[in-house]
Every structure is written in C-alpha cells, then in structure tokens.
Length: 199
Image (cartoon, rainbow, N blue to C red; front, side):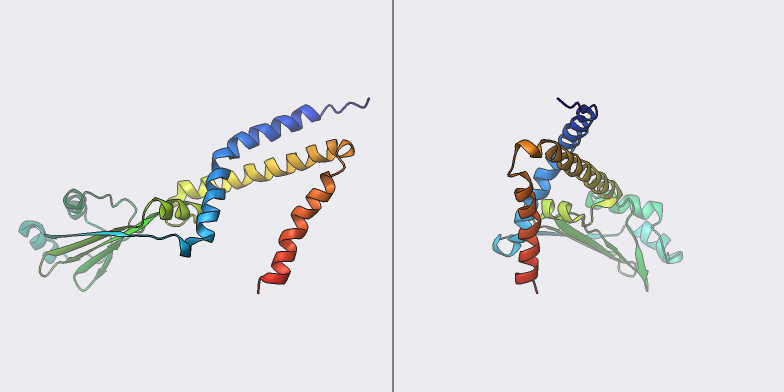
C-alpha cells in the first residue's frame, strides 16, 4: 500500500480552514439568498428625526471663527452628547457657514445638518432592519477597515479550504468514480447558465 506522508498535513489544513470559514460561509450563503431575492423581501425602514439648537456661547464662538474643514473638538463633543452618536472618522463638510455630516452604516443611514447663522441642528437616522444589515456585511458596504480585512482573510481561508479539498478529492478519486464527473458538473452548470441566460 502506498504511503502519503503529506496526507495528514493536507487534512489538517482542510479542517482548520473549514473551521475558520464555517460561520462566514453560512453568513455569506444566507445573505446570498437574501440579496438574490431583495425585491421580494419587504423592508420597512424606520426613520427617526431630531431637532435641536446650538448653545449660544458655542454658536458665537463658531461664528467668530467659522471652520472650513474638520470638526472643532467642542462642537464634536456637543453633537455626540446631544444626539447620542459617535463621529469618529466622519467627514465634516462646510459650505457657507453650514455643516453637513453623512453617517452611512450597514443596514441604515444617518445625517446631520447645522446652520451656524440660526444655530438650528437637524438630524435624521434610517434603520432598514437586520436583513439589510447582514446584506451590507456581505457586500462590505459602509463597514469600515476592520470588516474589509476580515473579508480578505476569509476569502484566503476559503481558497485554502477549496484547494485542500480538491487535493483530498484527487487522493480518494480512484475509489470514488463519481468524483470527477461531479466536479465537472460544478464547473459546467454555472458556465452554461452564464452563457445561455445571462445577457
């Protein structure tokens, strides 16, 4: 009987990569279905809005030295406290004494607008639900750097899982005649669908 000293290492790579990929693969498989049927899944966005008035002392200070970029610390602290939000890494857009900050996030969106002339603050937040949240995780939409790195590392683990599985299939194929026809089907079916039905 032939020995395959590398077989144990290959199996180890396969089960470790499968363990690392398990939850991610389930997430991406389920959200693949929800994304594919997005038009049939009823979404009821919940919109909340809030209005407030900039404190007079802070308003005067900002009018005397109106920012053209960035977010002054005192203003940022007041906005975060008043609206119960976090503004880390958010771009502040100034135009003619008006401030606008967009705050897109997975499964929702938010924005605030501040007029230094009147001191009026408007804030609106939209929540599209947990299905939209998971769909946005799938697409990497408004998810930040950490999630982007996770997707890249997850993809690498999936490649290791798939290639190690292919090598294991190759090892056991002589005893399982249906191995290569099934692998061939896995290639031919999506190729035919793409050629015949995707325009």
